[in-house]
Image 1 (cartoon, rainbow, N blue to C red):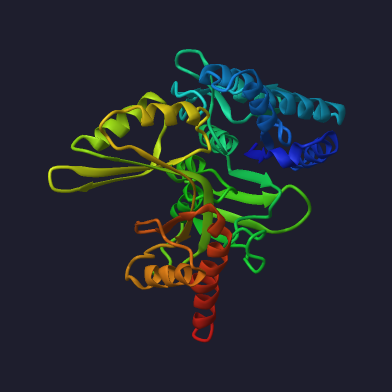
Image 2 (cartoon, one colour):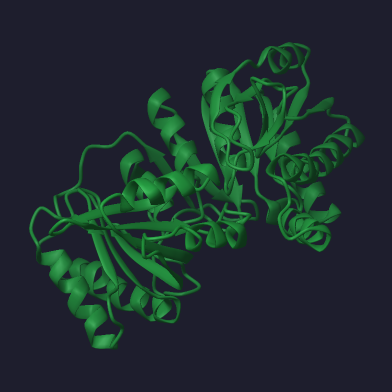
Length: 405
């Protein structure tokens, strides 16, 4: 039978009633003649609650112990869903990430999947069972429990879909697809019917939370279509798959992220010194810039606090380095416009800069790629900047095109 992988986010399994609704959907898919693998996140705010609990014990929890603690959340939801399915007469079995063959590197709290060995999953599917897998977690080659960072359950689902040669990977959350902006920030944002892998990956890396960037990377490598849908009723969805490039310069969406920190250092070895400290603390830079000068240089690294659990300790380590003139600037955010060939000319960047300037919000930094324009600013300015950029780069551009189309 064809295999379908379904992933349900934390809001979809937040309580027993919602778990029951998920069980009904899974049972219906099984009754339609599909083999079903379900990947679940932790219930509701369980992961945040566990992290807060750890911080009551210590301000600097060891990353290994955090993985042992945080991985417990998905075990709760996977077993409850298995019980709900069996209660409905649908044979089901739950597996942890390690039991399902998710093998990762050893980067605790932000691991990457390096291999999937789904032998036990395949065996149980052959016996006619629904297999439920704990998302967000795996086991390293050192046999240590690891977690995959924000959105890691998406990555689990797509990696399993690839390993099982599934016909589809369905990602269910509390929104019915990917929008041109967060509808909670931009009320007139519209749902996108389809996106290319490249567009979706850029949106995810720039802050869009519907899908995980590494999950899209897996899907692109194996040519797996991802269907982003709402767990509740509603026909809407966004399909992410291989698509021909859009017209150069066409912006598909505007997204944002907060919780950013800019670290700068000056000196002949400034970049090496920064990278050394960040590497020792397991911190990955989002943007890295080196600006050479006369006999010295200015290095800057942009960090996200999303998966950085020991920022206070890292900050102390950075400021303790003598002679490097280290400065740590917190309270930053970024707004990004995404589209294939967005910088084919400087028109989109010019309009973006004008839009932010009209708000009176200073641009603290900017970066571009063939798919992205990103402006760095203070956190307070981010929501207004998203609305203004969406109006200028998406809504007005579509209005200008509509007569010809």
